[in-house]
Length: 602
Image (cartoon, rainbow, N blue to C red; front, side, top):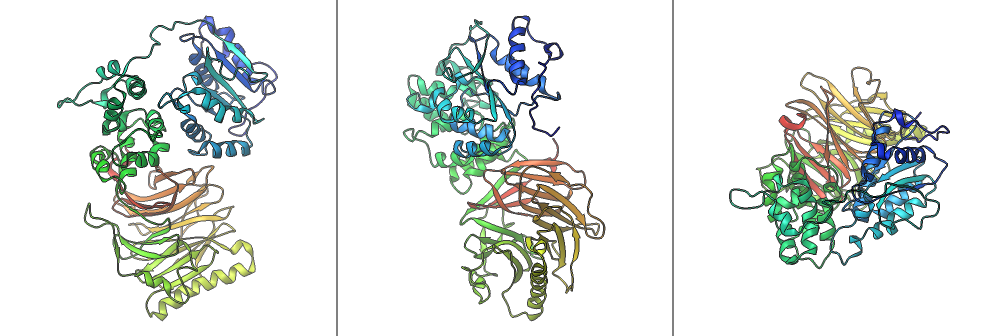
């Protein structure tokens, strides 16, 4: 059986083999379990009942019973309290493996998904957030905009908790599990004043949101929106960096969507950039601070400074940002410490000093002027480099959008021009003999002995030295699918490690004096968008960017992996030995400081 497959059973599962359930709810649990296992029955099951009747516990029981049990798979569980259409779509997309998507894109992806999908939706009747006069505050909006279109897909089934509401009541053929009356004591909504009074204070009498009870952090903004003194209370929360880090990200997202609410500085823009990641489950408040700080750097300097002390407590934090044209390719220049070669979407090449004085702005280096890309063979409007392999600050090998390797030499250097031209000629001639030799990836690497690593459609990787002439490369077939990204690094013990990614989501390691590793070092159902590697004080480290927005850091010697959640899809990466990860994406460049001493502690 493959992962993520729902199997239809003809014999109803025996409830006695599942986790214990309250005697009062055993019959309803049996009914829910039979519905879930019957793939040919109704595609919607409504879980009804008053507050305190055990509806959410029943769904949690069903979810717990499927763990490690063949025959039934719950593909996503999205607790809906406080969620809007937008935040619900982000969470469902994450759980289904697509990443945070808009509702329209989510519907397209689910519609194209070949799996029979089974969803649990607790607390739909408590969905909605933001000002009460906006549609986003009502659960009916989430139903109309997203749940009804999802339930129209023939391969999707859902068990939905609706309380005593009439949500989805008109859905034809829906099954129902009704738990009846319950104990609704304490279900009333507290006022803003009551919630604010329960927040501990710091020594200088400011709210200490890090110690506030979770229900208070989750509900206080909604209480402020509906209470007396609404404007002052909401403004006080949105101007408090501590609340931005610890408060309900879903509630803040819905509130900031209302343009009528005044906000300080460029908070609305900053939050919008970070919201898809902030609404994911991040238990570590320092990581939420790091995410929000990364969105503020280069956009809202005041907010960035407020957040910097909190972000600095995390194992990664943004140091600088240079908003510009979308960056398509990055590579560190061998022999030039902290010097980076970058290409933007127009084909313009620049070098940057990325390890300058701490806090100093990122500056362009004059050593590779803009006009260097305007040579007769490489006009900036004709070439769009998507990968780079620099030889030094004056020459590089480029892979453009037409899958052609091209040499760039900015000075009169016939020897270098011949060597780079020879590599381009070799692969151009090979591509003429068969499509499997068409170049699909290019990467560079190594600080003192530069390399170009070429990947092709047939899954082979070819390693060229750029420091000395080589008639033919070292080659090996590493992948079964086309190569999508490559990078190379020399280690302190004399090894040359080549990393490559395939179209099937595999990342492989090849030490060029031996055979490639027999199994991938990582395999995911997503495409790799960029690779970068460096030999650091803790040994070789590989950075992998994925199409779902995640950036994974792999400690080669131990095999440990840590995910750095990023704000957008990353299109290019570079990594210095000192721990500066440079990310190129649709908004330009950003430098992220990694702290090796804390990176793999957890």
